[in-house]
Length: 337
Image (cartoon, rainbow, N blue to C red; front, top):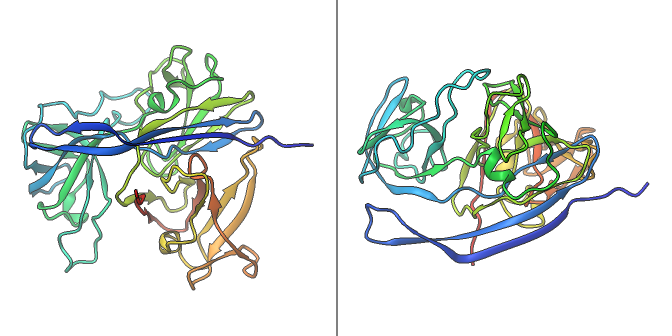
């Protein structure tokens, strides 16, 4: 039988998004674009968007008050409550974070904690700072780092302009959404939004799909997805939960990405122990190659003999990692000519 594979259209527009942070007397130009992926009908598919939203703030931290929820002071003024998380969502243990702080550098070379590319959800904000859902003292934050604030890419963002969605079908499953090891199912509501599959009522349109992650879509008919956004030029830390299913992507909107080439995936995997898997893109939702880090900068299939190269379609295709312990995959930024 002939299998269908996703059809791709990639469009990147250099300098087409021009926006200014209000506290800066300068404009920042990003590369924006979109990809078009048609996921074949069948048992389902994995999908990961390759973009992020543009910056809502860019500046420097001028202080950090650590605690269970830490306060980060910003170098500029923002609108109070503009970055607040959503109200609590029934069936999920918290409100959805709508914005996040991303740390762009590491200002303390003397410790062992890497803060470059760190992503921290925002709980609320004043005009001068943000409250984040983490104890920053355990993350290595000094309070003098360069940062940006972005709105999370949500399910509704990703599926805007898509085709093939019905009312309450197909199922979209996000792993680790409600804590490590969780899996939450969402259904399109027929009006461009999403609801929880557990009750067909609770609105989940704002559920975030974190940078460098993806989801499972169980589609019995073809679905075309057209995500849009900014091409990320900086590194991104992707949290990988131990003992859990983690859907991880390279965040590179190009047709072929060799995830073996920069050593970042090797750094994330425990030699010979942590298993990762590439999946087919033909709608069968079938594991293709299981592989492990070989301890020497390469990868082996799980026979521990056969070398393999981890090549994926960067516009849509993630890998699945189920590590023994928690780890971080640090996706390298895109190099824009």
